Length: 207
Ligand code: GDP
Image (cartoon, rainbow, N blue to C red; front, top):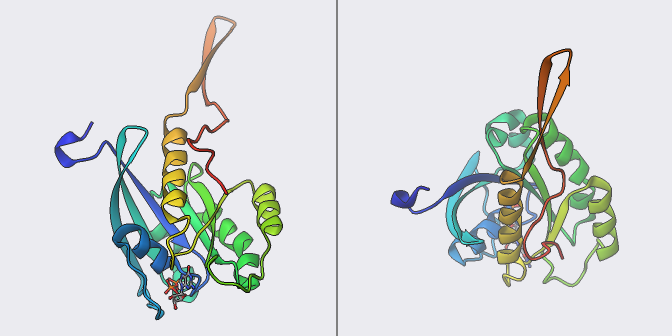
């Protein structure tokens, strides 16, 4: 317990994805309840903190925003180091940003720890001309085995839920029960500790 500093646990998460999909505005909306119509260029990396309560536990969520992919590609380890989770953001009105999910996923797998959780956010659902259908999003998430969320940084729809459910997923992963098995062979004991595979997130999570 870290009562004296106001939270019980701390998680570092990062948002990545193509430029202009809405990463900066998603974080702004979630942390400061603000939205800006003009594009804001993130130089290098930016970080905001949010304390939230999940399942009776106070969590300090450290949310890292990343710059456009060109700069970001040059040193991905910096952003992924010690990340508990990464959210890949795409724009539902920009098919190209959706088709890049796998690229970002591979980058995460190459650079983040193996326990880092990965989620996908389809942003800008307030707009009308969607280029990506709900079915395509569901199919892709199933194939890539990641949770997905739909949001609008402009109206705020789905934003709280996406961050809450993702944090809940991080907590449940962190607290996953372990299975301990002891094997005896020729008077030698081998102790194996394995994390149970299923993840129990509160509220079902995804959209
Ligand atoms: P980033 O480059 O991924 O950080 O994207 P920004 O947050 O800078 O947003 C890029 C542009 O998309 C800006 O003009 C935002 O106002 C706009 N934008 C971001 N999120 C949304 C959204 O949910 N709905 C709409 N309509 N516009 C958005």
